[in-house]
Length: 150
Image 1: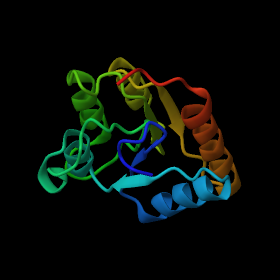
Image 2: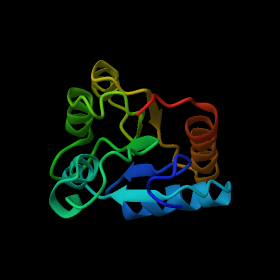
Image 3: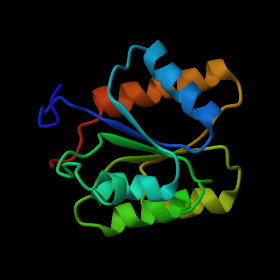
């Protein structure tokens, strides 16, 4: 698919843990969710990708991810700060963001919703439960949800 294709639905996975990254990608593929997956390994890389700066300065920023799967505990810039940047920018403020984290902190939950996340999901420890959670995320955000107009 070309970047300009209206059916080109990209998932931005913001995840610093290689094991969780591999599990998420494996679960998406296992459930036949064949969308392109772009992985950002820290908050800076996520912001660079979304806004076409740094190593992504050549990227066409008019092509937005269909959904951002955002971990909170990230190096450089944490997930809450990434979410803040997304919501403060006119071009990304409506972008669907699903916080996908191991955090059990009530403060993280409250802050995520206060900053405008669309959903907050605690990563299950068990692979089968994690795989099912990823399947449901993919089905909802990529097939059922009607994204905002670009």
